[in-house]
Image 1: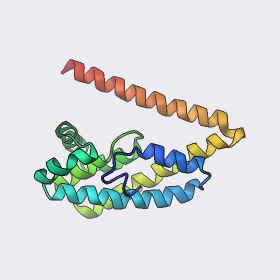
Image 2: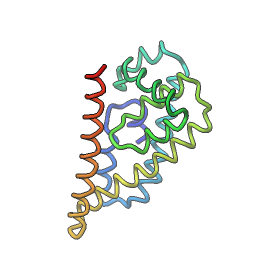
Image 3: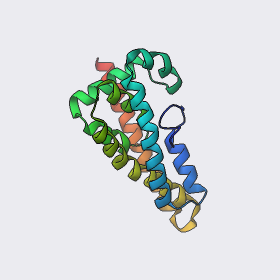
Image 4: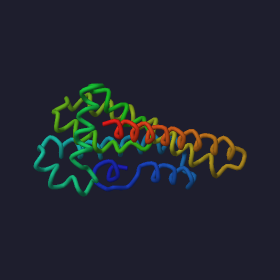
Length: 168
């Protein structure tokens, strides 16, 4: 999780659901995954603190683009530091962008760490729990329902984003 949330373009959802599928306890995944995500996010934050030139040079390895940085900055303008917590809680949001933007905008480091950990632990737990439920026969219907809700949420967010882009 530390590598995923810092520099590697690997979706955290795949890592966490796979941990659940492997039968690893979701509480363990939540705590260790949240800690790893926080460590990795700190690296992204430090990259951002170094400035735009470093982000421009190394951002391509994290799939960070100029447009994603601008979107992240707009989230910070709208939501302030709570952007960090929100970006960790919402599945399928590439939160490494927000870590880098937090560094670029010189967000205070202590709240950054606390909000990152507070958002990462529940995300890691829930995704591992979903993977764990898939392998247990009596919970397959519940797991399918949870996956459908996640997919519907993602679809809604993507549709809303496309509509907003087409208006602009």
